[in-house]
Image 1 (cartoon, protein in one colour):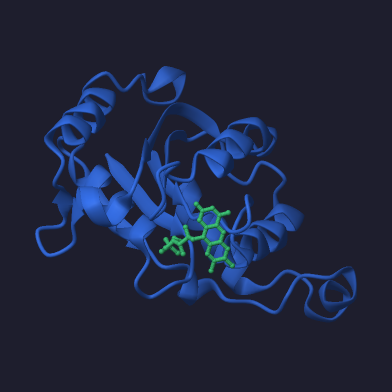
Image 2 (cartoon, protein in one colour; image 1 turned 90 degrees about the vertical axis):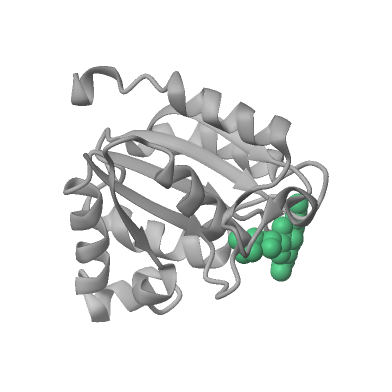
Length: 180
Ligand SMILES: Cc1cc2nc3c(=O)[nH]c(=O)nc-3n(C[C@H](O)[C@H](O)[C@H](O)COP(=O)(O)O)c2cc1C
């Protein structure tokens, strides 16, 4: 099973990348690829830039990575209650090549933030919006107060209750028809 894990963030210190990487590692028998949005940086999308640039290869590669995966683990950063600009930008470029950006791949959708709400606003928004782009969201999990609950050095959730909760979500993960 090929797992594509990434954060909806271009921060080199991304806490969402830490969470996505850890969550992906919990799926048994998974071969994990961690994608970094910094490798998919494109000019700020506009129809005028699109007229010049056409269908950028980086956006095609991003879509190909999704197509080649069996499962997506996406952890979203919350910027002012919304997607980060980095995520929205590659998503906009990619959607012009294929509206079904997420290709119906089973998705574990995550979010974390340093605050107590753990990115729950962006998680709720994404649950509504991403399925229109064929995100097949099978489960969600939000990790509150990242710095209190995650051990970056160990690469895992340090709060036992929250760690057990994520492990439960993954143990009960329903892949749906895609990988049946
Ligand atoms: C421009 C900006 C806006 C932010 N807005 C929010 C917000 O609305 N809600 C929130 O919980 N955190 C917000 N934060 C804090 C982020 O949750 C924090 O920077 C987090 O580390 C982002 O995830 P990342 O490390 O994966 O990029 C914001 C941060 C920035 C830089």
